[in-house]
Amino acid sequence: MKGVPLRVEIGPNECAEETATLVHRPDGETDTVERDGLADTVQEHLDTVHAKLYASAEETLEAGVREAESREEILGTIGQHGGYVRCGWCGAEACEEPIKSAIAAEIVMVPLDRDEEPVHEECAICGAEATETAYFARSY
Ligand SMILES: [Zn+2]
Image 1 (tube, rainbow, N blue to C red):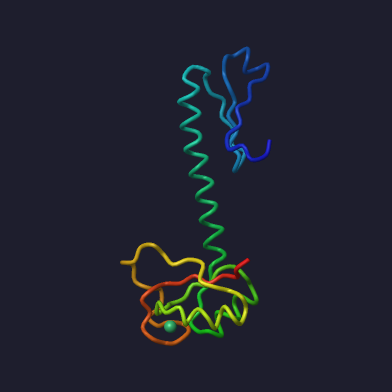
Image 2 (spheres, rainbow, N blue to C red):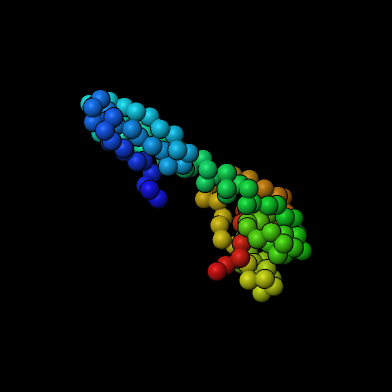
């Protein structure tokens, strides 16, 4: 019952009617479908379940990201809320160090799309021009 993305139920009713009931894990949505072509139907439902799980993961991620524009803000925000802090970064490792040594948080992610403009114009730590967007979080 736990961790299975799509449950296929075949009980007495489904046996009599040559159907199957598909249950989506993320929201419990059910659909009773014909047994004919079940493999294709299951594939379609798995795609839907994947989309539901992805959307909910994206929501959780966005809710856990906060902005910061200075060293103090990075420290204060992570200290108070945990999660991720997004800020401008000049790209120098030296700018990660003051955060690391103060609260054991470090840059855990830099977006792969290097053509995208950084979220802020200045590096939150040194004030130089930001060339990247950095995500700070506590390291475990
Ligand atoms: Zn910097």
